Image (cartoon, rainbow, N blue to C red; front, side, top):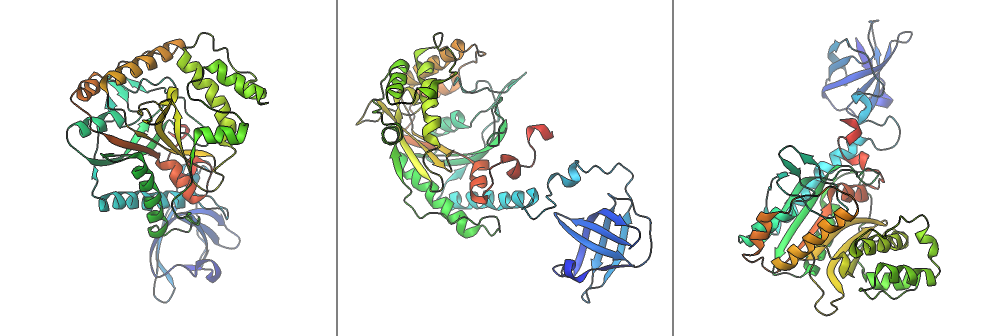
Length: 420
């Protein structure tokens, strides 16, 4: 009843197959069948009325003959833009399904690597009573609390309780984030080591990425991963190299902008919103990142680069650098000019935590953003003593994008916000 054109089906071994009929050519009795994300052309030996979108099952025997055919005619509209083609690219480019298969392998091997290093995988709540108060974040509020922007606070409470090497791959939620690099719901890998320097976690990234390149078998992972150690560059050195100014770390927003303008980069501040009503902290942050967006495009076009020693106003929850106290022990990993990971030698002083949280709330107020409650359980836990530790957060979706050579997050996740 059905036979397969040898040139199109020669890679199908004997076995059972299930697919969907995409097109039926009645004059030639040919049908185009989509099996997972690949197209095959079959020839019907007898005429039969078939509706595009119908499901088909068949068996290929050891003699390459097709038998035991079952066709379930579609009773619904066949939508070219619906879920039938959502994960399929009917071109020579890799399909979204292939990216998602590779994602499965990558995530599995991340877990394997951390297990081999004797880490404990934790699962902390997605719904919490208090989110991060950082001004640049838009936490998702529900009638029972907030969805996490990161598992950081609960993981730190575990460190207070005696855990020493923990990791997790968590769903995180940040509203108002949508671009080829962002989705409001995304996956984050976060891990902590007690009594270990931040450099150790930088080495962790180098080692597990090499592990992924060796262990994940996928045609999409074509990139040759540079051998470690990857370059380490300070924020100050990048400012000096790319815009020719000395970054002291304690400049005001006004002083930083004037330095850039004197160096010939006044155009970086074109159309910059009025910052007169902002806190000093937030004004500095906005001025800094106007400059940083320019610098970010000047380095790390292929080789990963760790950028360390960030100005203290951008410390977040990193501690001061003990040898240069105008800077914080914070590091970010960039590749292809994209931020991939963000890590701290963690602040442990509960009083300073509270001060920085209060500053975050003032920043939110100065920008007219909704106030959020502070995590009192975290602050109470920190008073009991957070041990010296380092932590790192890495975007899983972006990691897979880099490894697979795609520049759109849609390729590597099952659904974007617009698709649900």
